[in-house]
Amino acid sequence: MSTLIIGAGLIGVHIAKEIKERGNEDYLILAHKVDFNYIKKISNTSVSQVIEHDASNSENLSRIIKDHGIQNIIIAAGSLHPAFKKHPGAAILNESRLMLSIFAACNKSKINKVVYISTLGVYGTSSERDEETFPLPVSPYGFTKLYNEQVFESLAKETETTVVVIRSTGTIGPNPEGSGNWMSTGLNNILKLKKNTIPTLSREAEYLDVRDLSSFVIDRIHDKNSPKFDVINLGPGYTAYANEIIAELRELTGQSIKYTEEKFQDHNSVVTLPIKKAKEKYRYSPKYNIKQTLSYISDFYD
Image 1 (cartoon, rainbow, N blue to C red):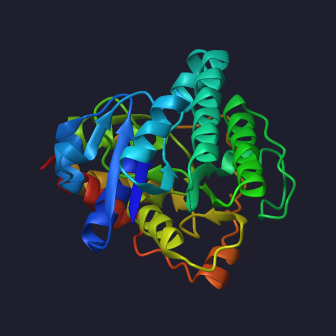
Image 2: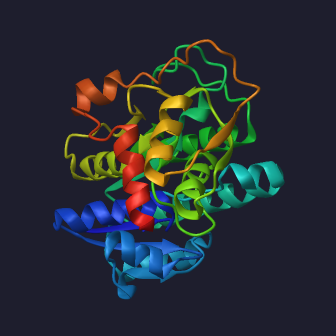
């Protein structure tokens, strides 16, 4: 069974690592830009398993799917927050083109399952934030991810492909050079560059270890009883406080690290993303806490 991982960033490469460690199937990584050193260090993926090519051309993508006998696709690519802040319109266009290309390629091929990694950002101002809550995104990023979800829901309805959408909290781990979401990038800069200041840090936030996300994704690929279309929240199940993170960073680096608390965040307790469905229906149980995640990032740079 061959799996195509679209995206060679933090999440995509750790998914490859998870597949490699389980040792039970072939996979390819497809991305328009790759860091071979990072891929090798994280997942020990060989150069022959990596295709450096733009996936936003559906004809090229269809050819890759056919030539390599791809049966499953994991989408771990998209425009991150910096791109949306710099030019929301261009970021939306870029990501929409990619998703429509994947949709068209899947329509031409017999794909068993697609796993799309979305974000809790689709909920926006929705209060409950469970999978049955109607999303009310407020940011270009959230709107784009919700649009992508609807594209893949249509794929599930119109083809034989099973689709799983995972709405995850902020995912962190050792980043490739010049990549990663804002939460992960700030922590990586401290541990890699030994900086003593982190620009901003939420007073209280959810940090999902990339290894927990990767493991859950591969479990869904292997799940033979998946509904035709399903949406699943995924997070650590708890919030971590800034002072807890700073204390751990100081211990790992030996430096007196300072930070600025995000001014726009109110001081009420953050309500964690509900993950009841993941736990009860899919037996999800996160393995890593914030201390273990920071240690993992630190070890990567030693």
